[in-house]
Each structure stands twice: as structure tokens, then as C-alpha cells.
Image (cartoon, helix red, strand yellow):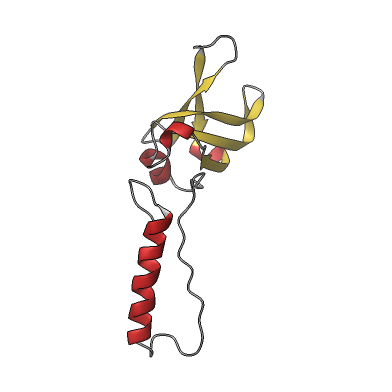
Length: 125
């Protein structure tokens, strides 16, 4: 299951119980024994589509590319923007100072893996 505001274990439990009740009442949907598992994409959810990247603008992400950009293939930073042409702008820390960063332009088609990066201050209460 998924939600713009995030998912709690309690949310998975609620959906699981509702689905179990429905399936018990409609036995013809699934014959025999079944195992129902309800889960969420997780705290470091994978990003697959441009829409996923657009949805999480402003969040910290990790990206791996198939081709080098500035001598590297692994990036971590704040997802700033996703252009109509699929170019992703990622603000990364340079390590040159406490507040210094640079923006990296990453073509979407070069991305081999992307996911949200856990941030303690982004957790849902």
C-alpha cells in the first residue's frame, strides 16, 4: 500500500484485516489456503519512474548511474527538480565546507538505480 503522507505498520494492519474479511466473505475469489501479505514500499523506497522522482522533489535520494558524471556514478543529495526532458537536478554536498553544495544534472535514462535515503527528521509520528 502507499500514501502521500507515508505508511505506518498500523495502516498495513488495517488494510490486511479488511482484505481478509472481504476474502472470507467471498470465498470464490481464492480457492484453498492463501497467505495475505500487505506491505509498503519502505523507508528507502525505490524510485522507478519520472513521476516517482517528481513526487519526491525536496527529499534526500541516492542515485546510481550507468555512465560517469564528473568522474563518479554514485550520488546522494536533495532532489531539487525534474525537468520535462527528464533531466534530474540533484543538490549534493561537496565536502568543502559545512554549507557548501553543488547541483548535479543527471539524465533520467542514465539512472540504473534510485531510492529515497532515510532521514531521521522525515519520519512520520
